[in-house]
Amino acid sequence: MDVRAALAVAAGKPLEVTTVQLEGPKAGEVLVEIKATGICHTDEFTLSGADPEGLFPAILGHEGAGVVVDVGPGVTSVKKGDHVIPLYTPECRQCPSCLSRKTNLCTAIRGTQGQGVMPDGTSRFSLGGKKLHHYMGCSTFANFTVLPEIAVAKIREDAPFDKVCYVGCGVTTGIGAVLNTAKVEPGAKAVVFGLGGIGLNVIQGLKLAGADMIIGVDINNDKKAWGERFGMTHFVNAKEAGADLVAHLVNMTKSGADQIGGADYTFDCTGNVTVMRQALECSHRGWGVSVIIGVAGAGQEIATRPFQLVTGRVWKGTAFGGARGRTDVPKIVDWYMDGKIEIDPMITHTMPLGDINKGFDLMHEGKSIRSVVVY
Picture 1 (spheres, rainbow, N blue to C red):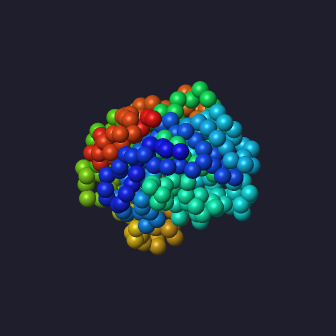
Picture 2 (tube, one colour):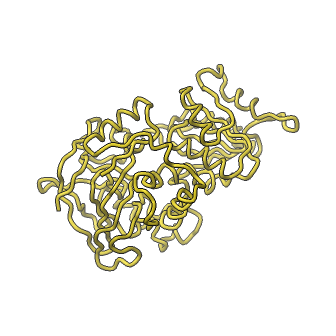
Picture 3 (cartoon, rainbow, N blue to C red):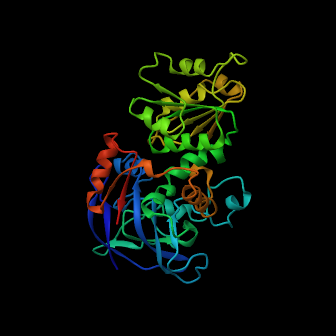
């Protein structure tokens, strides 16, 4: 079938909106009509050429929501008409990782997903008879896509596509990093580096967890109002904090009973390896936990003095906020629909597929929290 898609032809080039061909679902697969998709920094990371796993030509996009329109043989967990969110981190519930209950990083289709193909090793997308790569197992920059059954989460039918598509990555990653990875407890002190879409959802998660002190760090003063809207209690402009940002943050967290200072939890949402080090080093001696969410470019490494870790700080990483997609994503959609979390304010721009490159421009200019393409 012919579908409309934004095609990434090569690294560093604008997406080309065109008609491509999509083959129907095979065994264990579903055909989904994508109704809305968010434009995420991860898409930009790949499009820029910095992603070591980036493949071209490809149909990018991994933050979507839509309706199942067909299913292949053997599919039992979803049916035609179901509303779903594609999952770039699937949940097969059968592989050693899923069965361990220690991680959300399902390995059932990781190998083929990284190669830009479906689990059988082939692509469903093509253009003029030539193969196009899938992206993160999702390819939501097309108005129809094919996904493995284990990579879709069934959600309630009254949830608006143009809002809950954001649960497919940004919302779940941010909130999940707090609740699943860090396991923040009430009364905690936290620092969040980078107040973009992920960072604001980390703040939202910290508020949900009952953190008392939530410090947001950014280089854009316009982000102060955004952070406060979602629960931030203090704001620091990293460029205005003086030569030693770490010392500044540690001093902010000191109290009468605790003159050592340091945050109980810190979160890097920037992908900047220097910031990752700062996030670790401003966490509390003895028990501070620093969670890395941002993805750095190919070849970049993180560093700190061993003393920082020997004295009890913990560096942790998280993918998709530690969420198990088919289990947790429907719950997060329920939280949104029940008013426990907010999404609407973060959807700052909506546009048709033909304007998708404008969404990337808004991201580069720092003018959007999340742009959403509505099909």
